[in-house]
Length: 284
Length: 304
Image (cartoon, rainbow over all chains, first blue to last red; front, side, top):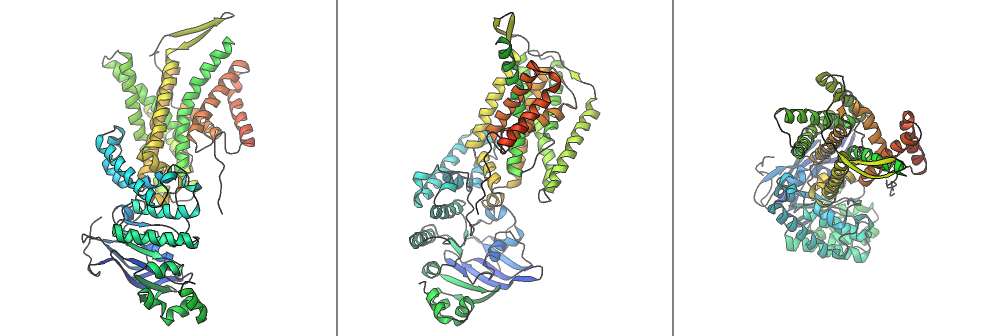
């Protein structure tokens, strides 16, 4: 896929969504939405249920073809990609966007290690000379397998699953599965990591561990993260920038503090009951 | 006892051939959830390619049998794999996102197309070949009955075992095998991780067809003939074997193949040859009543 000049995006924006509109029949799920995500930062997309957050993700990762609008991704080397023109596996392979889902979508029958190895498909594919040389056991392939195993081990160690590497992913505890899914997405070596409610269903301790993991991904690996989250303690604690959606429209954007105090956000998020609004916004 | 041993040997050999074909059915079902009804005809094509290659090799003056066998095996696998790839490309891939029955109907159509193609191209008569591999061993004799193990039977069983080992290694240890299993479980997610799902599915068809080609060649060597219609019954039997073993399960396919082969042989030996197919299918029905997912199939667990 050819790289296109990233005209609209500022140099340090990894993702620039402009005028994104998505209609399903008569329903407008997203209406003329524009926002950006900064390189090397954690950007959050929040909003009440049905605000269209997951639809945005589905547009970014090629599940939906947007009715109108533009989704541009710019790599650190300046190469730009128009995501709505890529589809299927190219979103990951070419544009280097990885995502996780609200409901866990690990390969339940594969082991934890194999889940991470599948994510390194493309690296191994090149090294195996597109299967043929791999079957013949060429040394380059062996080295690539070893590199893939090393990266998998690194992530397994990082999420504390090193000892359970050979267990079927479906048999792991819920919290471990969540972290394994993030590790798997990271194994594709993404430029942009999109996480759809990574803290859903986690208890307070697990959610704290998740925060640490995400912060370390940003700090140590310099990854850019785009996050949908309901758990305000996660959003407020780790995001650098927050975009608020309501009924498919962007109603606010800025730092977590800024957004938290915005009366429009409070109203949209929780109706007009301001006391509950403030309570939830503060993550209590 | 001697008679029984002989039938056991015959049944295992026949079962190996069924098993090799059944793997193709079960693999394709596992990854795309459809029954590739053209797979039996791919087996038939494998037999024909083996025959043609054999005749060419003999006509250019090659006489050393192991070399002939090896070359025939390689050419048959390669050519038939190409057929498998083309069938998927032409008849199934365009219908991937169509309604569920579409690829199945297309498969039935493809089966007829291949059958008739072979009939037109090669003629309708049965094509015999002189015995290529001869000789064998007399194992033991009891009550005047000699138990024979022919060289060709040894070749069939050993080839099957080697291929099975290779294939198991491929599925469980290599990148391609991992990708195949990942696509089997969640194609969308596999694509999001950068796996080219279409390509992986193509490879599945290629591998299934290559195994069917080996079965076709073994059939040719064992029975000494091929005809354009042999894919139909063998295909249905192998499909039955795959269902009996638990469709989607690779060891199940082999086990199912061996079971069908043994049932058929034993029934022919002790009851009547005419009803051997009835016996095989009756056992299938009985097994499916008590084990709906087959012998080694995993019950589908839906998480809510």
